[in-house]
Length: 218
Image (tube, rainbow, N blue to C red; front, side, top):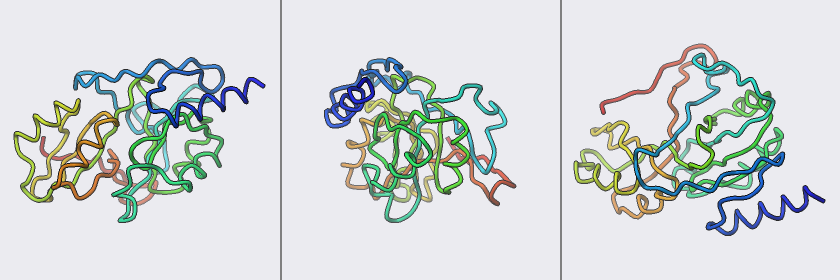
């Protein structure tokens, strides 16, 4: 019966965006969401598994289950999505993950078995990030504004939305941002924005063989 009540509460919270604190999987008390738009409070976790191996800086987690943020990309059909699809939910649930929250991107916060992370990553095009602060729902995204279209005034606007500019590939028209998930709608309403997609920190030149850290001008 306890599990039925938890499932009922989860459905309510996913439908009612104002509901942010409830009992999570395994009886874990999820904290109330920190909705601050202070950029200093941004928390985006590192990728914990990529290119066929655990992040060498952290190694495999020592716990049996953990919260992670899972994002799906890329592709022309996904970059304009402001929500995950049913197939994305099927993929995460097929490896034993429980969806805690959906993002305004093709992605979720999930509670999942640690040993299922490599299986999930094996689907390809999936970003798995650690959750450094369960009360924060921040994302790392690439935003296409157009070549040379993003200016100093835009940096201030991003800050007002609680975000930070990570990199500006100005000649490509792509800006990488850390930003609260709840601010993505405001960014999408900018007429210059053609698409937004989850950003991966690392690019696998050859699967499970060579890794290149993605970086660019600040």
